[in-house]
Length: 277
Image (cartoon, rainbow, N blue to C red; front, side, top):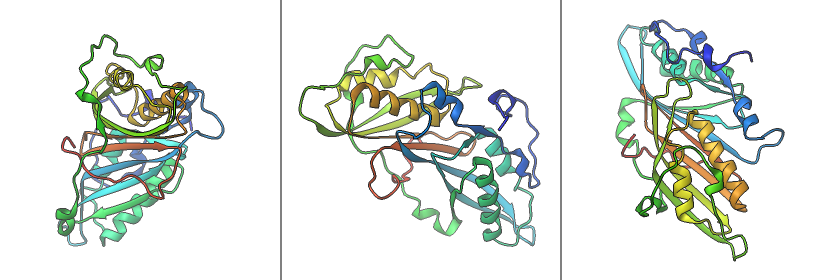
């Protein structure tokens, strides 16, 4: 891979193609940011990035427009992520493309997205007759945002994190709706709710909330922020088990929801759309 973020369409004026154009997809290697975190070789986590695409449309063989919602699940161990604007431009390229069936669309998405990320992805398409079955719900856990704390630091500071390393381990699940980061290229705000599920030395709640709020002026892509949160908590608080799940609000008809964990429940996290999504 020779692509770098500065070469992506993000932050640039773009022509919106309406004919099928898989070359619009812009992969970005994950390893560059993982190198910053000191991650090489075996990763300390596994997981997925769940993309929801709400603005998919194409033409059937008679030229009649069709619409669907897509859930795309990308494994965290894939070599690449896909830059989100290029993803949107790619999806728009189907707008005036005639396809024989929804299965033909799914096959093209499977082929192109798997090639871009460098690993097999999973796609589920929901057509209009299933829209009423798309579930909503919020991340469960104790709300950290209830804490009345003073904040004066808005960049990631892992040294803020504290845990009772000399006490008996606990299992807890926390949620905050105050995660905000900024696009690595454009600086546009990215808003998210985040769930921290762990077992091990008890994590100090105030320090965890201050740490999460510390991303407020930080520039990174969604997937990179979640991996940074995971690694910082793992190193500073030494949990035996840890999972970090962020549900980001959508932009351009797409939302990205990274999940990283070092323990298995036998399934991926639920893809429930939050109120802000």
